[in-house]
Every structure is written in structure tokens, then in C-alpha cells.
Length: 370
Image (cartoon, rainbow, N blue to C red; front, side, top):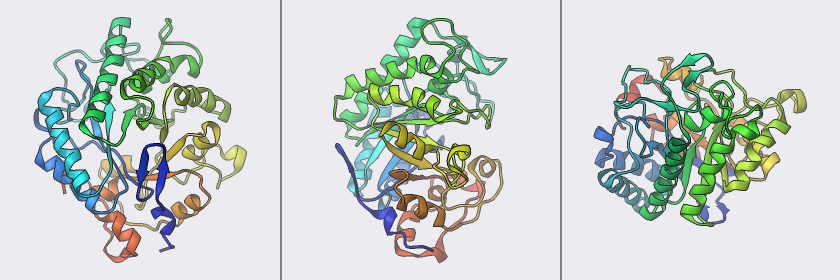
């Protein structure tokens, strides 16, 4: 195991101060009955704070819109009971010395893997699940305006409850990402268009509304991805110039942190430009926009997460590739997913060199909140 000190440098940017560079990635757990997080959820996140994670990002938690979630156990981030539950979560995390932000979400027209369906019709930019696959309703301009307002309201509640930042989920083929992607955005009004810059208008309006709701100094993150659950090979930006056209307006609208999701963090984003050891997605996003970036993707485990969630077991692996990229300041923070589902003390074990007790990941771990 290489020296991990580089991962445990403090991080400070604006009003966000973290004890290290380790982030708990947002991971859907679906353990919120009736959408209300309770003591098991609070204890789950508290254990990760006790285990040494510098920043915790919650599982996706949905805004106040009909059919905003695609699984019955996904938590709400609206309503008196749900917000009281989230207040207990952040208090527990702070009590353990941790920092945390909720990930605010709308799942768009995506489907549950288990067949669960919301009572209201799903909504999306063009009534599509993916290219050529109809599902649900086309959002009216009124629905879009109401959705923008719901994102802003949830973010204001996050600040009011005492969370340290808020993250908007704009990745993986969910609602915001469905506006980005030409395969699901065929609109002919101002929310569509041939270019990624045009299709980013909805996200820009959400970000501007959130920024107005939380004020100029509250940290705001946005999760983005090239790949979609509908198409793992999809790419919104085939070149650095297109990536800048996509991301720079979002940073200008008020995003402080770009959380750049890829399935394997060590894979270069544009190897045709800088080679097989070239910058990854988060590295290019940082270079192009100057924003703080978080990288993520199969940290500390063999295999990637889609296969793992499908049943393929993953074993613990070294962090040499991660340390190498962190040493060259390619990105600022690194998010860890499955390793923290199985082991809340993974970060502390990395810090102390206790590699012998690191755990792998098996899908059975998804059956409970460890």
C-alpha cells in the first residue's frame, strides 16, 4: 500500500472546510419508509463520519414533484416529517465530527429495476426514457418552472437544516441529465437545441434559482456524467471544447464543485489528446473551468459498480493509481462508493495502513444499512 498521506490533506475552498479529501459517494439505499429517513438512516451516516470520511454526500433525495422518485424507499427532501428526519441525520453526522450535504434529485422518466411505479405519470423533457423509447409525459413550461422552484426550495431547506453544502444530481440519465442528452431532449423550444450549451439551459436555470435561494457563499455541487444508465457508452462531450461549452455555463451560473462521475476513475477522458495516463473526467473539468472537482469510480475495489450491483463480487484492491493522480493535483477530492457500503471505517483503515482488514463488496450488502 503506498503512502496515503496525500488523501488526508485538509481541503478548504470558500465556506467549505474538510479534514481530508475523502468523500462518501451518494448511493441509493431505499431504506426510507414512506420517504421518511429515521434513526437507522441517521446511524448509517454517523458511522461513516466516525470512520473518517471528510465529506458525506447523501443518497439521492427527491424534490417536491409528482413522480420525482423511481423507487418506493427513496427519501423525500420535502415535507415536515422528511425534513425532520434529515435534521436528525445532519445532527448525528455533526455530532461525530463529520461534514455532509444532501444530494437533491429528480429521477425523470427512469424506471425501477424492481417494477415499482409512481402513482403519477413520470415526466421528462420529451417523454422519452432513452432514444426512441417513449415513457411518460413531456414537461410543459409550467412544469419546468415548478421543478426549478422545487430544486431551489429543497436546497434552501438543506441550508436551513444545517447541512454543509448541497449537491444537485445532474448525471446518470435522470431528469437534469435528460435535458443535457440529445437522445432524450428533442424539444424545439428554448430548453432544447442542437448543441449541449442550448440543452443545458434547464440546468442553468435550476442552478441560478438554487444560488439565489441559498445565497452567494453556500457551497453548491453538481454531479455530472457522460454515461447514462440507458446507454453506458453515451458521451455528451466528445472533445474538450464541447465539455467546456457544457460545463462552463453551469459554473458561471453558480456551481462551486463539479462531481464528475465515471465508472473507473483511472480511465482517461480524451486519451487521443494526452494518452492512456491522461486526465480523467474530473481532471479535464478542473482544467477547463477552474472549479473544484470530485472524481469517483471503482475506488479501492476490483470491477466496476454496474457489474457489482448486478451480482458480481468485488475484492479489495490497492490505491496506487489514486495516489498517483492525487499527487499531481488532477482533481481535488475523491468519492468512494461500494467500499463504504460494506465498511464504514474504510477511510480510517486506509489512513492507518490497516489493509489486512479491508473488505470487498458483495451485492448482499445492499440488503441492510451496515
